Every structure is written in structure tokens, then in C-alpha cells.
Length: 300
Length: 136
Length: 126
Image (tube, rainbow over all chains, first blue to last red; front, top):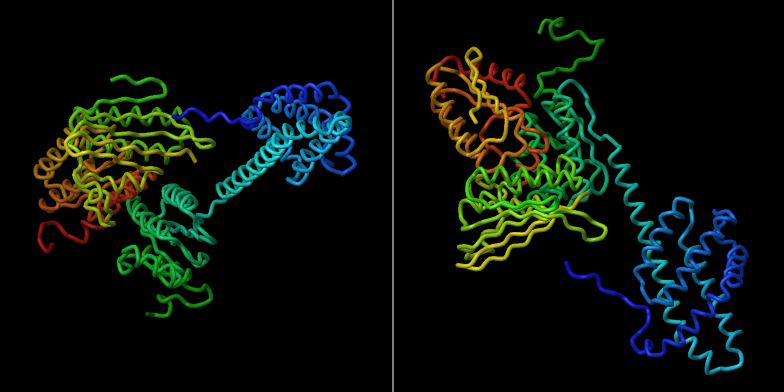
């Protein structure tokens, strides 16, 4: 495995002027309390982090400030990324939004910039050099924190979706020996695999002899998922169950043909109702209304 | 053959080795936290790759190890041998959905089962098939 | 390891207990072939519930068993393929085409009863 690329905030050209950085970092450390308080004040003023208590804001701003300055000093981004991830993990469930996170990091940058202006007010040249050192680093930090937050949000959303899908048991026992698997929406390979697993386990648990896979609610599928459908039918057979596929749109039928499926070999029925009737037939059931005389009674 | 807690190495000389390889591979899968459906895939893929080694290769080995590619975690299953090499890799990877299920190389099937698949082969020298299954 | 084969009326039931070496599979094939002749069995049920993998060699052997048994005038049904195993098999392209399958022993026996009733006693009319 290749060694992780070490990323550095400070561009090579600037590493020679490390005294400026040292001066900058020293200034930020010396004025830590004041600057951090100013920052917290601005956060409240901008009505950001409203989901957090004052104490929590104090704790987090202290950590972020210190991390910020550490990163400026060492130039090592990994620690910041780790911190950003950790922070996001903690605040996302609290309902903190992306604009808030970006907002507070930018506010910190503003506060620090202002303090640089004040410090260097006697020398434009000194200010200019300080800004040269500070600006790219600050920009990089903002981006890292924001991106880390967004990634974490996406990860959580994905996990939640997955959990919801896993919880739902779409395999429905209808009568003795019959299962229905209604599939709705857009199906990707991973979802398809999940459904197949649930179907096969359902066949075993319910001792099903026939399964009706209804794809009426699926507008189209790619060839990978189409192939998957074929495999599911075959796998069901290995468990002793016949699969009937219902509700094939002409688009899906076309996809199946394109991948080489012989539709005449696949048990397909136009719609779900027809599929259930066919399943009944295969199972040897006959369905009659209660208020009608049975065929025996009718003398047939 | 040496196997440690995070790596499996089995030299394939007899069909008994096929069983060992898939048993050890499965155990590694369990340690890495894979669920039953994935474990079945892992064991079956190892079985097929190992069988190929037994049938067609010289000094073949199955090697499995854990892999991490942030944020994914998975298992690598590799089949490597010293000969004779596959002259036409393209042909061997061609897929037909009505496979005979016989003792062909079964590589299209393994590729379908696994999440990642790569094969390097040199005629007369050897072949390495590398596959990865990610934890879902 | 030998697979125990039990006679149950007109049928033979082979229950695989653990992972099989190639030689064990061949031996199973030969045993079943012989016993079907000896007992004039009408059907063979192979229970693979205990198997966590069915690879190409195992599938080929099971197919061979079914073909040979059919030549002897009897039916074969494979039972007990686990859901995960079934899914792995089909991904590999192993469908056990032409070989009857059922969920478990109970279903397998039911299947046999249906088939042998239809077929009658002998090898005729196939």
C-alpha cells in the first residue's frame, strides 16, 4: 500500500519565510483568549450554532481555535481532517447545518485577519507578508473543514437509507407456499443484492413454492440489475421455488432481451393479479367466492 | 503454509488444499466482520480460484488479506502461480450466461461475484488473479 | 469422509455431513449408483444442507449423479441448498440445469412421491 501522501499547507516558496509564520502563530497564541471570545461573540451575533448551548460553543470554539493555530504552525492537514470528521460526527446529529459550519470558520478567519491588521498597522510591508502567509493557509483550512463536514453528512444519510431499506421486509407471505416481492422505484446493484438475499431467506423461512416478483413499480433497470433478476429466478429454483415475474414494462423486457435472456424461458405474467392467479394454479389452489355455490354444489 | 491472523496463505497441491484455503479464507472473513452471504461468496470464489490452480497451474497459491481503502474495508483474494500462463486472457474472460457449469476456468463467474477483479498473465511465466470483496 | 446413505422405502437418502473432498464426491457418486441397483430404488435424495459451498466440481458431480441415476430408471432431487450458497452458485453460473431441487428433505420426499406416482414402477415410457 502506498504511503499516505503528506500534505502541507505551506507552499514550498513560503517555507523559507518560516519566521513570519512563527510570528503569526505566536501572535495568535498570545491573543488566544481575546480572539476566541471575539469569535464566539460574532457567532452568537450571526445566530449560528443556535442548536448548541453557550457552554458547548465555548468548548468547541476553544478546540477549533487551537486546532486552527496548530495547523497553521505545523502545516499538517491530517490532524485537521481528523478533527473535522470528529467534530462533524458530533454536531450533525445536533442539527448543525453546513452553512453554519462554513460560517463559523469564515468568522474565525475574519477575526484573525482583523487582529493582523491591528498588529501590523504600523507597517504595510509587514502586514503584506503576514497576509501572504496567512491567506492560503486559512483558505485551505476552511475548505478542509467544510468538505469534511459534507462528507460526514453524506455518509450518515447513506447509512440511514441503508438501515431503512434493511428494516423493511418487502417479502410478503400471501398464502401457504406463496410469497410476493413487490419492488418499487429505482434499483441499483446493491439494493438488488439485498432484495435477493431477503427473498431467498424468505423462501426458506416460509417454505414457499412460488414467489411472485412484481416489478410494476420499476420504470427501468440497467443490464447489471436485469442480469441480477435472472440470477434471482435461478437461485429461487435451487431452493425449490418457482419465480413468476410480473409487471415487466416493455423497457425492462427490452433490457432483458438485450442481455440475452430468453423471455420464453422466464415465467412472466403481465400484471400482479395475473401473477397471483398463475401462482395459485401452480400451487393447486382454486379460489371461489363464498356466496356462490361451489362447482361441486353446482353439479359440475 | 503460513497463515497469520490477518493473512491467509495456502499452497494448492491437492484438492484437500482447496478445502483448507476456503476454510481459512472464510475464517479471515469472519474475523473481518463479513456477513453470511458475503462469507459464502468469499468461500466459493476461493474454491473456484483454487480449483483452477490445481487443474492448470504450477505451484499455485491462494493468498488472502485484509484491505482498507478509506472508508471501505474489505478482503483481497489472490490466486497466483508460476505457469503456464493464459495465452488469451480476453477469451477466458468472455461471459456467456448459459455457462456449462463444468470445469472451465470460471473466471467470468468469479468476476461477477467479487467487487473488483484483475488478472495479469504471461505465457510461460505465470498468472495472478486478484479480487476484492468490500464489506457492505 | 463417507456420506451416509440410508434406505427409506423406495428411496435412498444421502446426507452430506461436512465439506467433501473431490474423492468423497466421486465415492458418493459410485455408492449411489451401486445402491440404486442393489435396492432397485426409485429415487435418490441428496441432502446438502451442511454444505457452505457448492463449487463447479461439486455441481458437476451432482449433475453426473442425476444423469447416471436416471439411466438406472430413478429420479434424483437435491435438497437443502442454503440461500447464500444458492446465490453464490448462480453468480458463478452454476445452475444445476436439468437437476430437480427442493427446499429440504420433507419437500424432497413429497417431490419424489409425486414423480414416482406419475412414472409408475419401471423404466418404461421415459
